[in-house]
Length: 265
Image (cartoon, rainbow, N blue to C red):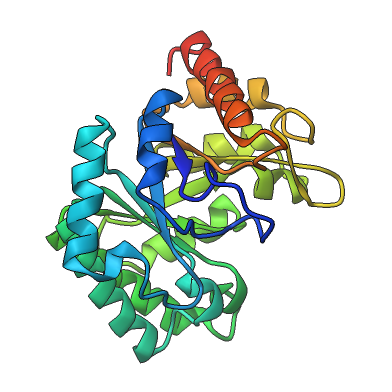
């Protein structure tokens, strides 16, 4: 399945990761462009205008998805970028929002380990405890927990060893990975079956997000290596909008759909 990040089908002069003023409008656009789902997200600061925080908002999401024959699938939570994952306040936030995601029937919950939640030797012990706790709650609601991070496969598996359940998987971000100058082939092979979802974007030498195909990511190499591990997961396009948003979003879908078909993923 190929989805697109919420807000990427709406024009804005603001930053790239931007919550749309009219999120319901994007469902119809996504359908016209043949996307399978919209990846929802929560902002770094709690935004009560985000439909996830009200029962009526969740109902409207479900109705629009059904109306446009889109799946409700993944949710990326940027709150952790500005709020440290390892403290009690953030854990309480996680418990609360996961209950909301249960109502929305989300399948994958993504925690980005960047900013305040970037793991280091000093903070990772408490963060890992909370990751384990969050994963248990997700199991209760049949939601897979995914960690989005620049960490190496070795560091990921060190974390998994400390978690007393199996509900901890990895989100592979192509743009973030390429700026680390890491070996795609080795990383994909080593993460293996634990890669459950992929954010598709391109970056240049300055680590700036660019139009798909204009940066450093070799997408044929990416997909050929995904084929080698028999990847069965999903994709969300997280790229620059371009000057003509809808035209670019349509081109992006077709580009990746061809690669999915070429490598039979």
